[in-house]
Length: 210
Image (tube, helix red, strand yellow):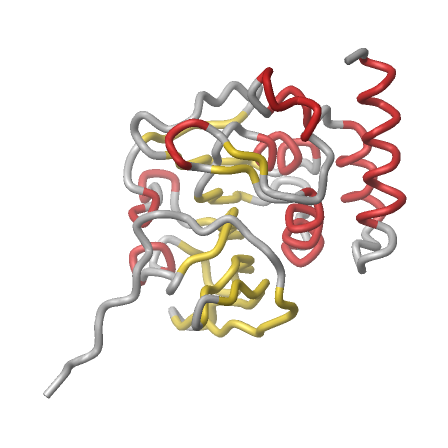
């Protein structure tokens, strides 16, 4: 497939997936129209790069659909210079977009996870649910997938007033959520049910059973 084909597919993604589905932040649209998503998927799956479905990666992981990425970016309200903690960086597509929007990105991915190569992005290898306290506090927590709960360890790495975007798994349904941290407490609002990649290592503790 040629570069021209991918360029046309990228333009179609913007028009048919983003603009028609409440991604109306022009900076986000411009970034996603510029960053070549096909460079962040395995070579054998490049034809799937702009399909509105998760793209399977090695190790059982997957890249979120473009619409999910666009909605997360919109809700994150990235400003130039924001310090962003990106959890579940996968191959670095979201990291590249965040950097394009002017953020200072610390991207966390598991040991042995997908390879990441994004200019200007600090990559940290380790458990996703541990984050990266070394560069805290952060202005934005960007969890690139759905989790059962946002661990206290991540909330503690955020500045007061920090913005949080994530997916939450509830009874098998993944929901796009956003919120803020105020005085160390995270409040989240459910925005929309969306098909999202579920990240490993975020199972909620089981409740006490008599």
